[in-house]
Length: 219
Image (cartoon, rainbow, N blue to C red; front, side, top):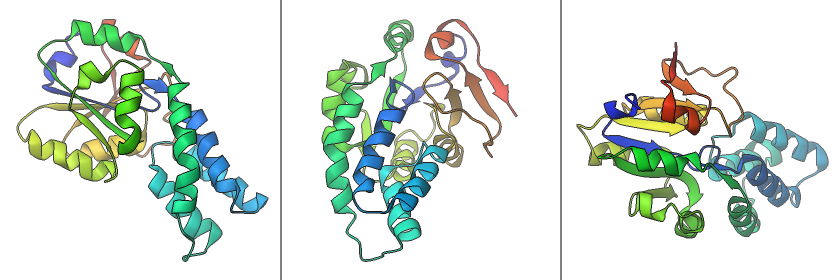
């Protein structure tokens, strides 16, 4: 518990950290994309999606259109519209880390923020569904705009605070480093940290372990 006391602001991701939703979200996005491509293109997108779990739907759909479909005139809203309802159900049906509530009950005097790729239009519904709206209150940062822009907003809001970004993905780690946040990687619901280019970050197996153990440092 001494570890978290070093920080003024605790910045949490949602998918792959607080809820075990990555696989279901991937299936939802793959399903939305599959309508508009051939099988060989779909398989290429599936590989790309698995290799980049932390990227937003905007980045993934942009890659699909311009790099796989190679059709710059394709309307991305066709995919977004199919993905919207499926992603909401994927999140609502996901398992949540109950240890997060325990952590919140033990840690006091911190600013708790949720920074997520979840669409702003469904974010309030999702946090209410899991009963974490009272923890984050108005500190909800969804997309759009991008996580990169949102992180800069948070740094500007708290220019002199020690901020810890807690997440499951390398992309969030890179965003953290560019905004002078410390970064803690939690393995439990993630897709692993193999072949990451990121270094000098903290690692712990699960939120439950964070209650009782000190994270290790990855150099």
